[in-house]
Length: 456
Image (cartoon, rainbow, N blue to C red; front, top):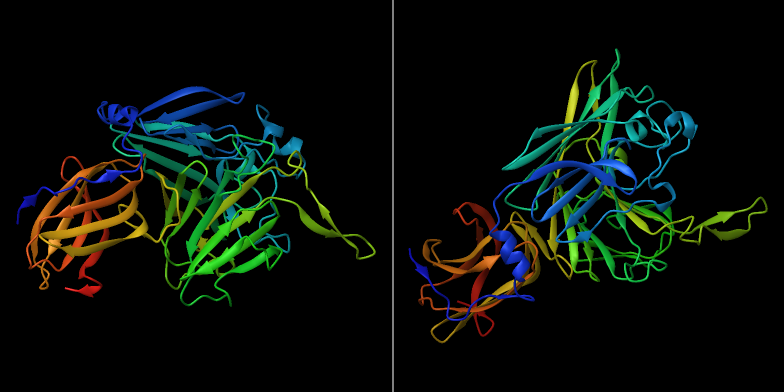
């Protein structure tokens, strides 16, 4: 096998900016520092791609994620800089915003359902600890035992120095002397206010997750709250789409693919949240992924007359929740259960066609035989920095060449349009992402080589 240099180089959308190139040359390290955020004491974990801002006082919340200068999460202006204890809240839920962990299932019918309210899980201070710092930053947030659910939450979050990847390890502990049965849920509130016009919402914000091929729901999803025929929801090729609109709604999906993707087509940034699906496990309401749209909703008076309530962003702010459920588990006293999720912030401007280990395909890879070589085209977003390499195989599956294309970075979408000088033996091409040290992050996309619409 050998490395070949392509005839034409890879095109990067907008090209890599000098700031991105400069940051790539910086020392590979991350840092953890105390500070202040919106009036709260905070802890900041950062590398040169990502900044994570934690406010341990607010139920251990991750209040903000910033990637390449772009902020993702919602913070409620009503409560900025404030702290309201569960005793002061008197059963009300205090929505500070950010990202947190909740019990599931929700409800008020018995002690095996959690009423959304200010409790130890969601509202008492968590203990913040630095576990590691330097080549990898790891922090731990330890909650207090919750008398209502019987659980205690411990979150460990890791950010490496070599990529924007964020890893979450959420542990549910039985803090009682009797068995408990719960699911835990990752709850992330994304900010939907239009940055240029905060009085309006972002009109080009989307959320995606694959529908299950064997869904328990007739349409592959279930509208649990709000308008069933909400035009915000659509499906195509087994991909569920949510085009955010300002109307209250909650939709449940039993997706088995293990990912959801947020795409802000206005800012051209997005987030991929990964989780592991456990086959034959019991999930709350058979649901793995939930999207909640905050907004006005229909209410009925005593005479049964409908009206719209909450149509002001001052009282009903612009945000959407992306929620991921763990399986429901039973824990004996002293036992614990861990739920892992991973986030990949990326630069992206269109719908995901495929999510692979090293990134997202937004336009499928095509490989067309031309005189003296093949032409590769496609659009992608990568999770890790490194080198994009085209590996060419013959019809027997043997590798015949490797073609290094270009350096790529998560902060820039990749637009591929290049020619490769390969032999007539070439049958299939795979795009691989390699780290600068040669580590294989996996296959981004692959394609059979075609000649005028015919497979070679």
